[in-house]
Length: 213
Image 1 (cartoon, rainbow, N blue to C red):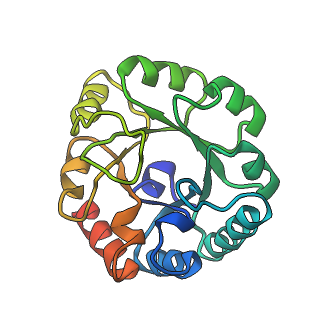
Image 2: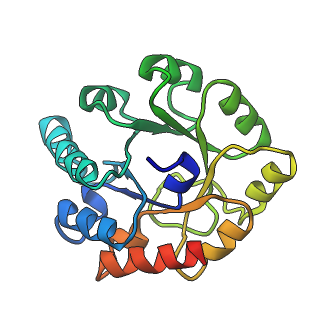
Image 3: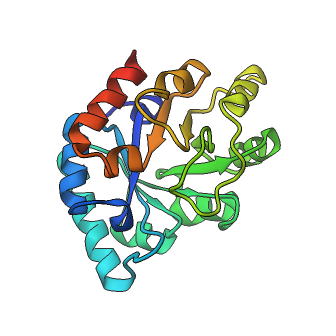
């Protein structure tokens, strides 16, 4: 089993609204291309709910299991528990980190989106395993994205002595991925750079090459 820092290298986030073709096919291609961790995020216009959401999550989870890729669920703690997912990722607007950590137990991965040093400090003290930091570059994948800050916060947190695993998110492509890692991130997370690529396999491969540099 790779370490969490290694697993964060090429972090793919996706749900059915993000895909141009069948999500299962997109995920298989992405994994073959070099994705190291997957987050199921079923949000946005036309997102599945209820049984359909559960069935898709289960299908994508089984693909991840076959390839030993950690399967993380965005926000939906009930779904994560039901599926016995490898972990969850939450934002600042979701349940408090402390509460989520208690609900999922000590052995699951808990990722938290942070936008300031204070949020990072609190998240770490309350049980976060890694930070999602962004948006690094402009993005269209999230309607409620915070202001773009480039790699500034990653650099600040590293200067302040945070050794917590960190992943950059927001507008990341194979062209700018290396700069995010150079700033101190352990990896990059993307949605559309892979999910809407003509070849998710090639897109994931290009990201991986640039992250590993």
